[in-house]
Length: 179
Length: 256
Image (cartoon, rainbow over all chains, first blue to last red; front, side):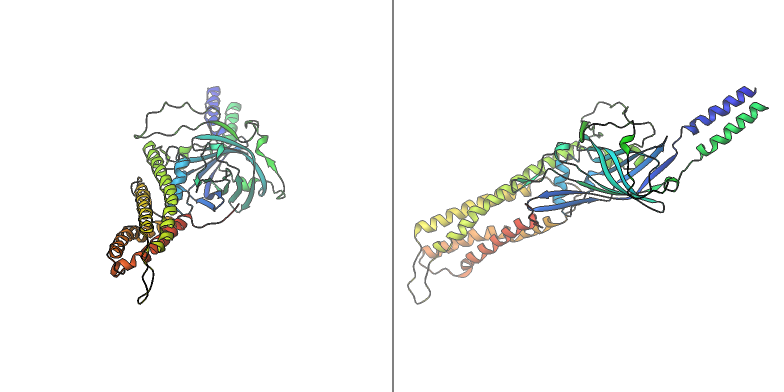
């Protein structure tokens, strides 16, 4: 009888033991890509990203996603062209995944291995530097993903027959809060 | 009795796990800002050269697309890792739309032709403007009027014809490019389109006024009335046309 009771209690505690220890939610964010052309310098900005982080066994898995069409460069014609060249109607989300240790210093430089899904391609960027700052419950991460057109098999758009630069660095500023 | 006590202890120990909502920043040890660590220390992460192109993303499907093969669950992701579905995007935001992609592709193709042909149109347009004075009678009232040669008149008229043909072909690629539903115009494109309301009518009026001026000159008359506005309208048209090209390129920041 006692053994049965003990077993039942132990079994009931198992799911709790394997549960995630903490969760994070993306409170606000600014993602901006920079496009360079001999005649133009353009920044497309999105504040529409959503993200979540779940921590388990000392590791946190983070996911951030933003609709491709949410990037605003200040010109609707250019934004539509961006969506077209990045196959943004067929692959409407840019998705970034990373895994970080749960115990990190409240501020300083952190390095993350990123998996970026964009334009129908999945690309890994290893050891990308981010600055972490903590303000109360807010944890802000800022850094730049060194993306290029060729990484995602994007035909560089051209203006007056001159193509844009291959580099399209994406600046990330994300403020997280524990759930 | 002992077993019951052990069971109760086990249950108590598991309670924090059941109601855990750890405040991670508070739990972190305070270290200097320069302290660095790397997530690459995690044994779960690949250590491939960067960037690594891994696989082709499978788009979500909707009614507009060919049915896709169901994709097996990603074995590389831990079960506890958040998924796209957890983020609260609407299906409209995450679903692939092959029809829209096709529309965007067609639109870009047509606007590329519009852009290139529009730039080439500047050549006969400028040439027409340059040859304009050669096709004009010279001399003020009271002086001897020098009529332009027939060759000059014909050359100017031919250049005007080529310009008009190329202009309207260029315009048709913009007019008939597919419109994207729900797209609100913002930025320089609005100026580009607004200027078409000047150079468009100008491109219709210029050859008509030119023909009127030609007839008057052929009749030995001094160009008068509306026909005398031919040059002014032509200059206004080319100015608006040039401004439209600059507007769509604005802001120009040279960075070589």
